Length: 172
Image (cartoon, rainbow, N blue to C red; front, side):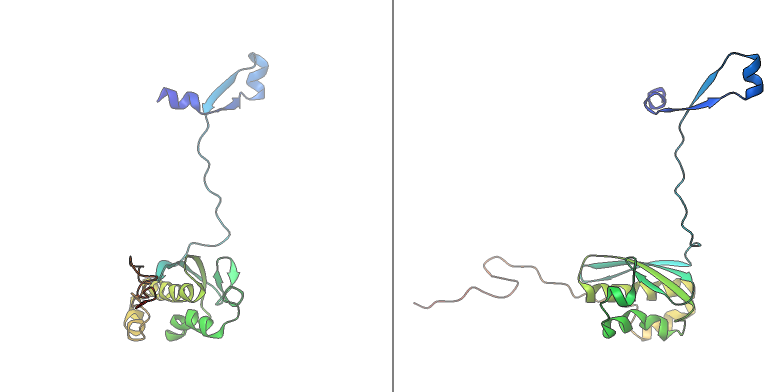
């Protein structure tokens, strides 16, 4: 434990001016404490959930707000390149329970392509809405928004070009 204190740079703490006049200048050394992370201007999230599709993973946070959706720091229309089908995919859970303009959504996306990420966000939003209000679970389940789509890319097999495609057969 003493080694830990020696390795850390000490922080100077000086004595008050009144005491300094009566005594010679003293410096007291204290170990530097870890600083707390800066809090963002946003209040705490109402719900946090994770959605997955193929190799895409979306971590979704829901806040009270006016209905803004932010994906990786961009507006939903900019991130999804204005593709109407994908935008409606993302907003479908909110429209199913009629809360489109009551919550702001912030999602961090990793992996996959844009359509897979849109489906992952949809699942994350649906799961987060269930955390906010468990009564919505039945409605979202009937709409098929809480079911994980298990389809993944099939692995390549040896002796084949791809998962199922074979090399060209030559008879002679």
